[in-house]
Amino acid sequence: MPRACIAPAAMMRSAAHPESAAVSQLLHGEGFAVLDLAQGWAWGYSLHDHYVGYVEASALGDPITADHVVIAREAIVFAGPSIKAAALATLPFASRLSGKIDGNFLALADGGFVHARHVAPFDVRQDDPVAIAEAMIGAPYLWGGRGAGGIDCSGLVQIALAATGTAAPRDTDQQRTQTGDELPEEARLRRGDLIYFPGHVGMMVDEERLIHANAHWMAVTVEPLADVTARLKPDHDRPILSRRRLTQ
Image (tube, rainbow, N blue to C red; front, side):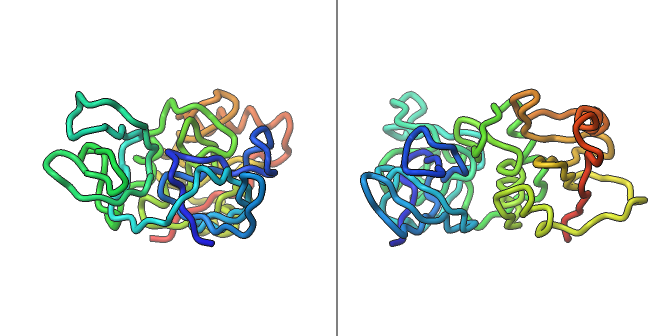
C-alpha cells in the first residue's frame, strides 16, 4: 500500500514501539510502501532507498506528487503568506512538497505556506554535495536521523548526494561498496571524496579536512582527517577502510 510521510518527519524503528531503536528517518513527502499494518504501526520500506522498518501509521498519508523540495536546513510552514503569520510546523532539508508559487510563498496543496527562498523546483539539482553538508554544521548527531532534529553520518552523506542527483544506500557499509570508485593509495584527496572508517563515513572539505556527523562531538563538524584517524587508532588497526571518489 503506497503511502507518504505527512508529518514533518517520522522515525523508522526496528520494532513496533516508540522506544525501540531508530533505524532511519522518513522526511516529509517521502514515500513508504506499507506491507503490514497493525496496532497503529506500519511495517514496510522507504521508497527512496528500500530501507525496512516500522513507522507510526499516524505519520503516513496519501502519496503526493512533489513539485518542490526544501533547500534550506529548515523551512517554516506559515499559516498564511506572511512571515508574521503563525508558524504551523518546521520541515527539514529535502522535504518533498506539492504546491504553487504565489508571490513570495509556496502555497502548499495540503495547507500552509513556505517562503519561496526555502524551496526549489523538485527537479533542480545542486552542484556541490559538500556545500549541502556544510549547511548542516552544528546540527546535533542523531542515530538514524536524516535531518529532522538531528542526523547521523551516513544520513548526512545520503542527503548531500541526493541533492546532487546521486542516489546512495542508507548504511555506511552499503555506501562503501556501492558509492563512488576506490582511490589508489597514492591519490591525493580532494573536496567531495568519501572516507570510510569502521562504522563511520565523512566527506572531505579539502585535501586535509573532513566534514562528518559524529558521536564524538555529537554534531556535524569539520576537523582534520588526521585527528579523526588518531582517535580511531587505539581501537582499530585500520582506521580508514576505504577512500572513494564520486564518478563525474
